[in-house]
Length: 175
Image (tube, rainbow, N blue to C red; front, side, top):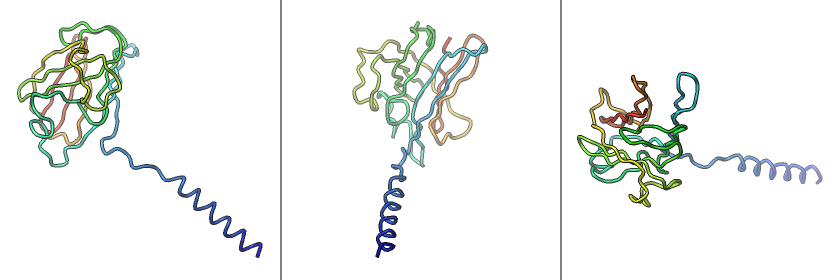
C-alpha cells in the first residue's frame, strides 16, 4: 500500500514539474537590437525593434500603408538610443532614448524621433511630441529581404542607419 501511494505521489510531482517547464509561445516577430560602437569602443547608438516577416505578403503600400505613421517593425514601437548628441540627418538631437517611427512613401520616407516611450505600435503616436523629422529617399534592394532588418554602415562622416524589408530600403545619416 505504501509503495502504491509513493508511486502516485511521485507521478503527481513529476507531472507538475513537467508542466511547470512549458514556455509560452514566442512572438512571431522576434525582438532584435542593433548596437553601434565607435572605432575607439564607445557606445554610439542602439536600436531595439521587432522583426516582422514578409510571408508572401505585399508590404509597402499594402500591409504598411503609404502616407501613414508606422511603428517601424512589429509589436512595440521601435526605440533608438543615442549615447551622445548627434546630427540626425540635418537635425541636432540630444543624447537620449526616443521612439522611432517612419512614414513610408513610394519614393521618400519621413523618419521621426518622438519623446513618448513604451508605446505599443503607433496607436498613441502624438505628433506634438516629435523632436525630429527628416526625409530620406526610398530605394529598391538588390534582393528581397524576407525579415524586416535594421543595420548600420560606416560612412566618411559618421554612420548610416539602414532599414530594409521586402524590396525596399532607406539610409538615414547619423553623425
